[in-house]
Length: 325
Image (tube, rainbow, N blue to C red):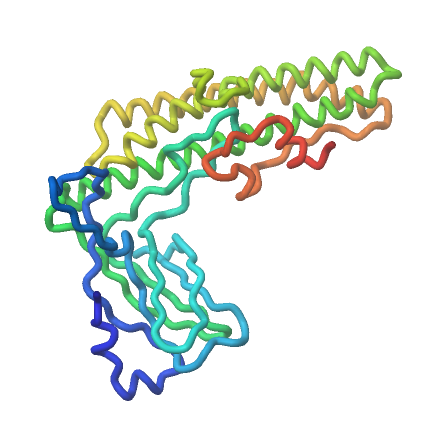
């Protein structure tokens, strides 16, 4: 129902190869959840898009090269990339006004709260239309819902806290990935060391110790949520949901809980460092003495290794990830 773009289709605009068109002011509406308040009479209709509608005009259909939209924050940091429509005429793309979800380590259950990123803080953003070798820019101003009881400072505090948790999830994902890499490599080498029982025992012991450390990070009991198992990852997901699901400033308890979980992750990282410097070093020395390939530890997980909210990956999924049958 926003005809603002139509009102701005002047002859000069229609002659442009591509141009952004103005729309109504964008506000982040209060998030609501369900309800049936209509009583004995009901009317249903489509809701407006739950996001910022970006509108642009193209004189002709885009044929060559890529076409996409990029959103940058006030500091010039790229925060989202959106596919653009190649059709001629007016095109509309809806941006959900969220940053990317956290990278979450795979486990026996899905971290539901972390399936989406937090909403950005209202303010000024830059939208770029990349059309082949040409770039077009526009400013997108996002305002607070006038009904919102929270201040801009509240929203900034909430966003910063959610991103702090997101960064901690990233550290956790990288640590989990390194631990699993050591465990899988040790298991793979042990499977081919049958002619050397002593080395095989040493490799299996390394794999078991790595697995014990990993169990500090994620729930590993098969059966998903019905097991009730919770580890650092699951605890952090609960805090993330509490912070990201409420647009006011986080509580002192929530911030203290995040700091406590950060220290737990640091302790787990220290345990893994101890394993690398002791057990892994001894295993690599034994492998080297026999002319076999040593076990290396990756620096970090690939950006796409965690899936959607650590989507319940099992050991079989991990085997596929590391290229083993």
